[in-house]
Length: 405
Ligand code: ADP
Ligand code: ASP
Ligand code: MG
Image (cartoon, rainbow, N blue to C red; front, side, top):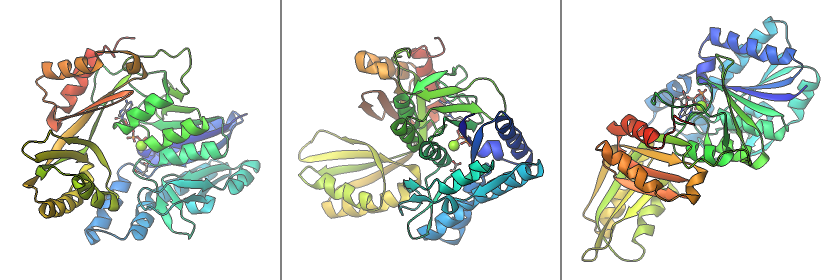
């Protein structure tokens, strides 16, 4: 008998038939003698619909009301699943974030979990109840509902698994594991049977949306074994776990892409101390994350500064940067939202040379122009024109022989 957390994503709970399928899976594990906590997302598309509704009534909706609204999709699925499980003759109880007491800070839309009160869940598990928890949501210390960022149900599930010291956290989704590249755009992508926390974290941060990055940070910190599997088949699966001696230190284990990118260039910025601080401070004050930054060499006392932000934040970022650009006497601000970021990831990169050259050669071979480059110990990223995304992913997948073992 084990304590199991099972998380089902949006496509796995997209309609009543899918929820019935989830109920059958949950019961199979329950009947095998396990204690089960189910964590659900909203039905596929529902959170997007709620976000659109909020923006129909206001350009910048109040954070508190916005989070209370966009968290409602999960209330629908957890209650429906509990009703189905009850109908099938089993004790099941839905719990929303504030009912469990998943306590977070108050950064609406990107709240971080401080603490999870496990008392209520443990009491229910002792009674044999299947506990069905709404993913993606928490509550601050004053009782305001918060949400954990898009894809946040993964983080809810891993955080619950860590707090309850669960034996495993199963993430059920629409693919049967983690692949060397997004299997929906790369025909030759190969499923990995295991991947280390570090590599998965970099892949997620670089755009592989199969797991929310926060969830892997937590899994690594609390050593929660995370198993990614399909809610529609019983085959496959990928274990995300500690790196061990058996694991091959692949030079490159995966290729990822991120279309949520936009590039801002401030042209002819006076090259003197304090200018970068002036440009980036207002962005920080508005909680806008800056990803890559490039500053060209100074020419006659002027330089160009280019950086990337999330496409969703380009409007606000543009406004803020325009203002500073005027104040500091820069020539103009240019925006390009038709870009994407392509990355290769692998712990083996640390000890191999020539990886960057191979990446650039592969992109050049397809006529893909590189607009920006950034490197870290186990990741190499390039910003390119968005229209070349699929082509670039496949070219890199081939160049690093990722379809072969
Ligand atoms: P859920 O709704 O279950 O949370 P998501 O849509 O958030 O599912 O994540 C699953 C999707 O992640 C897959 O459909 C796939 O397109 C995408 N994905 C991106 N990169 C990868 C990868 N390397 N391996 C597996 N899936 C990936
Ligand atoms: N429903 C939320 C979203 O669409 C959370 C999740 O699915 O994990 O982002
Ligand atoms: Mg997801």
